[in-house]
Image 1 (cartoon, rainbow, N blue to C red):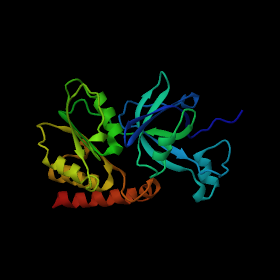
Image 2 (tube, rainbow, N blue to C red):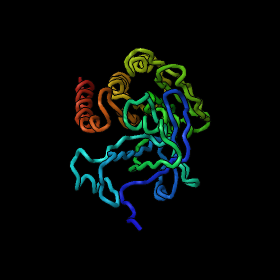
Image 3 (tube, rainbow, N blue to C red):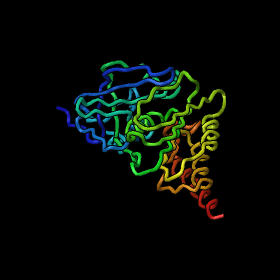
Image 4 (cartoon, helix red, strand yellow):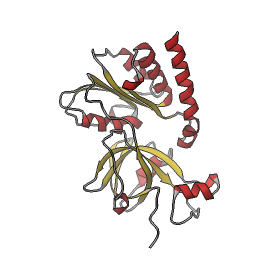
Length: 278
């Protein structure tokens, strides 16, 4: 019997569903998720592992071992995706994928996935859940943040105040989201404008309620940077009230974005500190 891997989970595709023209849901399960566990966060994420076809990897397979013993060009590729839902009783993990034809790696995989396909993953990680003590909630993002936003809305208490702004390509990309909260959900249609441009305008135009906010703002790094400046500098919201980060960067794949993300964030923080001090 092969030694059990120590650094990843092994999911088997149970079913798939096309939610909208640009989003596919994949549900995986199986004994390989026996050790998978979440901890009550609504932005849990996993790093999907995509080995290269035709490359012979050390066995038992381990991402750590691959990185220690193989040339970098053969390291399995990683793609980060939010956990849309996890049911520990049925041991079913739900992931939603943005799909734009053959573009990218994980999207095409999801679009072509069939029951029985294997999906390896690391994690989960995460760091956000809506603060039940907040006076109101602000949830903002593009399609990449939609699974976490939907999961957060499902967790909000009955009657909790929430302003939700989600940017998608067009009305056909809207999804129905269940919530007990008093949530005002605004779908912002991108059309032919750059990602996040209309979303930034919508947040800037929003009349903020009185009281302390708990905010979740994620998506393409360029617009997230603009909204971080708006919320921190112009609105005066402290970082302890914000979960805000670039999930991805236009023009960069996941590896390229991870390679520059730390320096990018440092520059953003420096500019922000200078603006707050002026």
